[in-house]
Image (cartoon, rainbow, N blue to C red; front, side, top):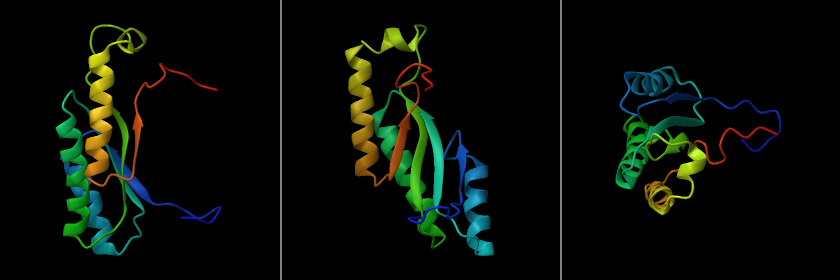
Length: 124
């Protein structure tokens, strides 16, 4: 994956790591010998432990089928409240939850993550 222009194969960006889509995607790649560079999923939870558990689960799903691929959480965040993301950004509990979730995912061996709405709807 280091060369410019090289194709990267992965997904499925499942909303739930327990989705049959995730297991089916990994199984199909393993069975067919299709190259698999990464798997990705999303999680919105106030439980840092849940973030770590899901990251570890992605690794297990791959290992059970003899595959090695990067594991990514392509959207994560604590649960959303009734207030805007900008209003919640100043909540120290929310910041602590994000930090603890990142640590839990790293400890579980996650390769990369993207915090959803880190900067509310910014596009440059």
